[in-house]
Picture (tube, rainbow, N blue to C red):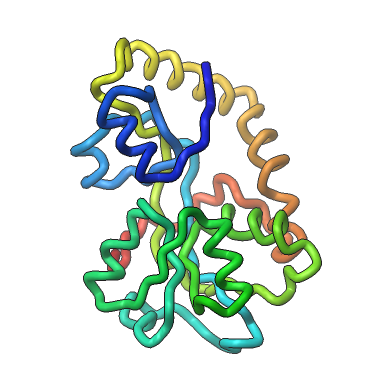
Length: 210
């Protein structure tokens, strides 16, 4: 098994071409299910709006129209980007979310939409002395389940997916999945929010106006 890191667009092309078995994490959306197969869910992700507190004190997300008038940092291949364009929201694209957060910090963009886990992890990683300058919307932009997106043309993909799902179920059963998740993500969130991230199970999956 090999793990390689590529931009989202290239990952999707590799799945479509049968070059890669899978890519993750991808939201399990109807549009994505028409294109790829999916593993059992890995986690439930909550996308929030991140911003710099001093620049926009009191900002809150109240639907996609509330983003008009702001420059929203986006990553190439992000599934939200097309919907932002459709809603006439100004989007500033970057190769990845690391670049997007650097734009946010340097005031080259105003808002960044990303999963809360990923957001606080990257802030903790790249801005450890400036974490208090960042803020996250209380309102959720969208809540979805994320999983392994699996190529339909990769050799023996069905059998490999069955093996993955069986292993994932065992990791969740014996508690090792929770342990890995908390070790990877909770420290970053604890610094700012003091909350556990995985498996909160709050509410239904919400697509909001996305």
